[in-house]
Length: 141
Image 1 (cartoon, one colour):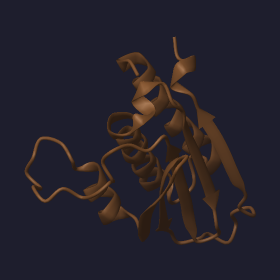
Image 2: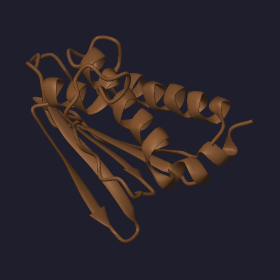
Image 3: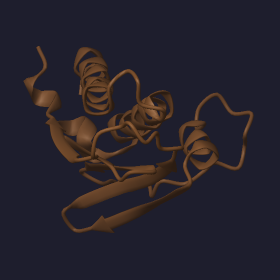
């Protein structure tokens, strides 16, 4: 995946979060940052960089947000690096800090990094619903 396609995929994923949650949502900033980190990891560390696709699923579950990013998988299993002072490797440390729960599922067709982040619900908010979007790096110019 080239740099333009990578940047476009990250921008599209953040736009999905903003569209789903809207500007007034109490978890907007946290969810946007978490999605950005997981999508960036998928682009850099998975076989998706070789032309695969990334699927982002996001559900507002009344008092928490459930997020899943599915990608092509790869040789290296997602993990938090031991060296917290290294140049890279902070993405999952951010996820561990901000997410209430997170994990990884892997099968022969790919890998899904999932997470949940809680928020304080406001009574005037409408009933939550789910949204799934697919960002295909091959479609980027």
